[in-house]
Image (cartoon, rainbow, N blue to C red; front, side, top):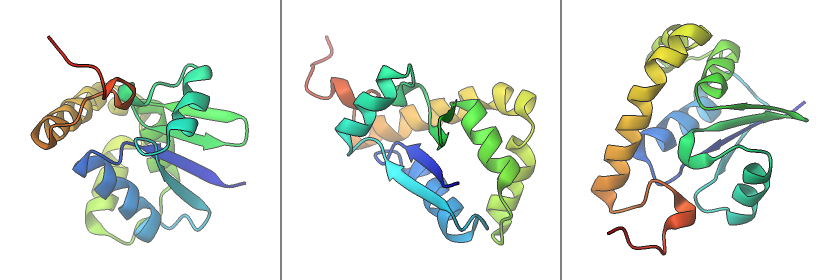
Length: 130
């Protein structure tokens, strides 16, 4: 069954991880989707309680993982040929460690989006912050 990784394409770190996972992750059936640029997909995910602003989503059939669980599950399955991806796999494949470290990834994402002038939540892009 195809794995689908939905990530925030506005975040440089997220994009690099997603593209690396697809290209050198050793998962031939991995499909990556830029959730920031796909509003209908975000609506579908939101209806399932999966908010892209709170983390990446990994889908396999009816099964869904969100945030740290998505990264842990993906890393657990990776068979990377890339040394950096191999390191990330080692660090994030254990769910307890992924839960502990995931807030750092969200912080890095927030900073990367801030530098680019993008909102953390793509569905709030048109709203001005006071």
